[in-house]
Structures are given as C-alpha cells and as structure tokens.
Amino acid sequence: MNSRKKSFFSTIAFLIVSLSTGCNGSSTEQVTNSEQSPQAQEAASAPSPQSNKITVVSTFLPMYWFTKAVAGDAADVKILVPPGTEVHDYQATPENVKEIATANVLVKNGLGLEGFLEGTIKNAQNSKLLQVDAAKGIQTLDEISPIVKTHSAHEEHNHEHSEGNPHVWLDPVLAKQQVENIRDGLIAADSANKATYEANAAAYIKQLDSLNSEFQQTLQKTPNCTFVTFHDAYPYLAKRYNLKQVAVVEIPEDQLSPTDVQNAVKAVKQYKVKALFGEPGSDNKLLTSLSKDLNLTLRPLDSLETGETEPQYYFRAMRANLETLKSACQ
Image 1: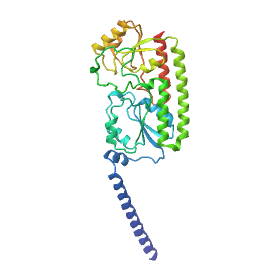
Image 2 (image 1 turned 120 degrees about the vertical axis):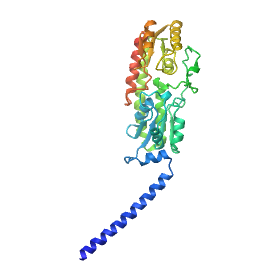
Image 3 (image 1 turned 90 degrees about the horizontal axis):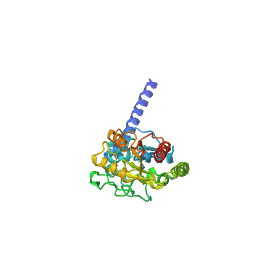
Image 4 (image 1 turned 45 degrees about the vertical axis):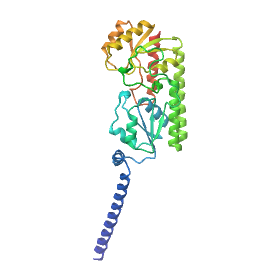
C-alpha cells in the first residue's frame, strides 16, 4: 500500500511540474511573437534546425554565385529571384518577405537593378538587416551602350537605369570588386569567420584574374569588333576588351517590335557589324529571320541571369561567351 501511495504522489508531482513548465513556455512564445511583424511571426513559427551560421539572402544568380563562393560553409546563403527569371521585371513574393525578415545579411547588385527590393525590405521590418551593395565604388557606364544609341524611344521601356548600367558582373575585373564588397560585408556581419571569408574570396578572385587574362589574350587579336545585341548587358565587357556593343534593345523582349528590327538593320548598315547576339534559350523566329536577311550568324551571348547555382558555373558560362565572341569576331 505504501508503494502505491508513493507512486500516486510521484505522478501528481510530475504533472504539476509539467503543467508549470508548459505554461511558462507558452507565455514566452507569445511575448516574442507580439514583437515581430506578421511576416517574421510566420517565418519564426516554421521549424528550423539550430545553427550558429548567419543567414544571407542574395538577390539573383550572379550575386548568389559570388556570395556562396565567399561564404562557403560558414553561412547559409539563399537566393530571392529564381534562376531564369527576368530580374528587371521581378515581383516579390511573400516568401521573399519572410526570407528577408529572418536574414542577417542581404547582398544585392545595386545600381537600380533590383527594383522590387525597396518595398520588400520595408515589409520585412528587419531593423537588424545588413545590406551589402556589391556594386559599391564601381565606376558605371550609361544605361545605354556608350557606342551608339540606335533609337531615342526610351519611352518604349520602363526600365531606365538612372544609376548607370547595372550589368557589371559580366566584366571579370568588376566582378572582383563585387566579390571584395561581399567579403567585407560578410566580415562586418560575422567577424568570427573573417579568415574563412578572406581565404574563400582570395581563391575566387584568383580565378577571376585568370579569366580576365584569357579574355585579354584571346580578344586582343580582334580589336574593335562590333556586335549587335538585343539586351544592353555588355558595355562593360566590350569596354574592357576593346570591343564595341551596339545595343538595339535595352531590356530583353519576348517579341521584337518593328522599331527594334528597323534599328538592327540600321545599325548593321551603319557599322561594320561582325556579329548578332541573342539571349540563350530565346526562341525568336523574327530574330532568326532577321539574321539571315542581314547575312549574319545569330549566336547566343549569355548575360548570366540563368544557369546552375554552383559558383563555378560563372566561369563555365563566361568561357562559353569568350568562345562565342572569338568565333563571331574572326
């Protein structure tokens, strides 16, 4: 009988302790959630593994490559704009808001490219977010190719880049500067992993130096090669390697307008154009027909806004661009 009594009272004591602990835990959770935005509350409610790593969100593919290369395994790196999605026209999702709300660092290209960010950051209500502008300190070119403005109909597009052309990642030398800015931002947010970030950045920069040398050695054989593009993405690359871009269209379009076609014909006649470049994967029958009419081979030139998420993909895609330029300019 004594044994049963002891067992009974032990059970009662265990229930009292369990109820007390449960109430205290519930109270703490309510206080924490009440101090967060609705987006942050929803993100916090989702189960997540315990980790001492900082969380970094990058805007689109090139920023992800550079950030992941520098961070390695020392930070959790995410991407906001899915690869292959046009960043110029991107509309933020609720998931983007949640990701920024719980992030320590945001890495962006800057120069007005990520127009969706301002409102998204405001909605995220993350006062501790460290923003890294990867293009900080880079001397920009105008929003349209400095070689020629084939038309004055800027009003046809709503994507004017008042801060300069944003496609700096396509120049390996400027990409180095972006990697350095990202490195410095990660160190500012997570000084404990400074040595890792410095070593990873140095390794990636060494590869960028080699890539730059390859471009120089290859393209110095075809100076002043002029090419027509239907995306004003290559003025930095052209300037770096003494080429000439004639941008007919500022932002890639699903279908060329009659004005675009007229401008392309005009540009080919006006300049000694050697190449006509379209976006990889685009299926524009009009552009293919136009290239035949102009007696030019239509080739793909990659602006690197789509592809694999592995950081080494940058070098594979850029070397493919180099081979395309070499072939077109001979």
